[in-house]
Amino acid sequence: MQRASIAALALAGLISFGGGANAQQPLDPQLFCGKRSVVVFGNGVLTTQDSATKSLDVVRRAIRVSLPPEEFDLLNFESDAVYNPTNGPLLDLLEAYLQDIATDTREYWLILARIVPAPLGFEDIITDIISAAALAASPIQENHVEFYRSSIRQGKKVILVAHSQGNFFGNLSYDALTPDERQSFGIVSAANPDSFVAGGGPHTTLHEDFVIEAIDAAKFLALQPRPQASNFTNGVNTDPLGHSFLDAYMEGPGSRARIIGHVLGTLDGLVQPGEEEEDGVITVFAGLGSAVRAIFFEPPLSPGGSPVETPAGSSVSVACEDLREGNYAYQMILNGIPEPLPRVVYVIEAGDKVASGIYQFGEGDIFPPDAPDGPAFDVEVTGNQEDGFRFEVLSAPNTP
Image (cartoon, rainbow, N blue to C red; front, side, top):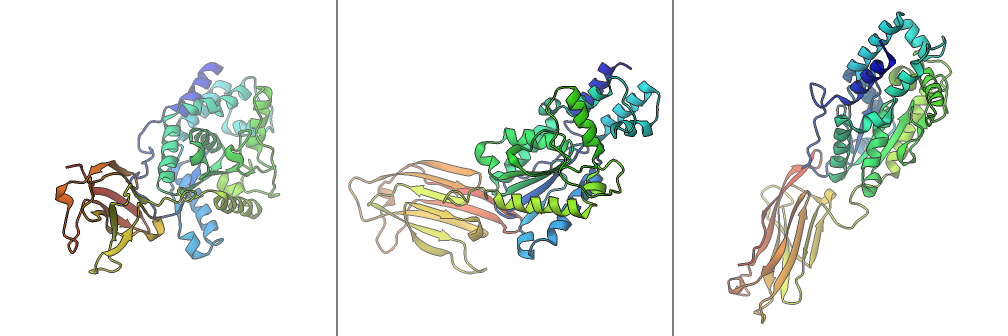
């Protein structure tokens, strides 16, 4: 088999996954608030979905013993969110390579570990496997970006723990986000075959990681930017190649503590989406002027209670931590009978729902002083602080 056909197999393995049993299910884009941060694992090649899930679970358990319960409870761990299902075709690539050089699997890994010399063209094949350009066109990559954006829109920080090829996906995702979104997205890198971590995130590469060493040699010969330098050692690993996330990076107590410390430090340094602004998850603006006043109604504080009623100004906001299930209403009331009757510009935002317009008061809006009434916004909120909330704008004033 010629090198070109082997390289084609590598590229097919990287860009041909648009669906199937392992396809990522997108996060519900209508849920807001709830958990404050989401942690995901970006796997490398030849990683089963079960192994990727176990990798994130090891991270979760290590974080759990490192945080107070009330802080840990604010974290969500999405095991399937950014899974990279490249294992099948790359195993086909291995099989094709073995057929090509008429050797055995042991020699393949010995070559990767640079224990035996690589045959002509092998370094180029490895370079094709780790090509970031091939990943950029992948539907999987697009799914990753959409997951990150959905999470950030919901008010969550996002931490990607990226291993091996997962670093390429993470770096490309970072580039696809807006500058504001990047403030809430962080990458913690392990076994990075790329030359950088997007956003300046921390990395851990073991001195005994022979796979990264092989990739470094391949990129050097191909005149490509080389992987980040190895910067840590566990001394001895249960993984002879020193590359497995579970058996090398999380099995070694030193590298495990380092990576978990990086996760917590990166999380602390990210911006909680929406917190850099004064606006809440429900915001109302109305150009009331002196002729109009407003009342804001919030759901009862206890089941069966009365709505909470407070005078309101031209703007009102409700933060995530103050949100509860029920109906919120913003009612506009005329002060007397002004001449001429006023027009009010309004904007209401509730999660992903927006209503705006201009309301012209009419004679039908003039009520006795002891029984005030008037046009109102009505927003229905369903959900809870644990799982998040959904919003519906049930009514907004229309010009008669």
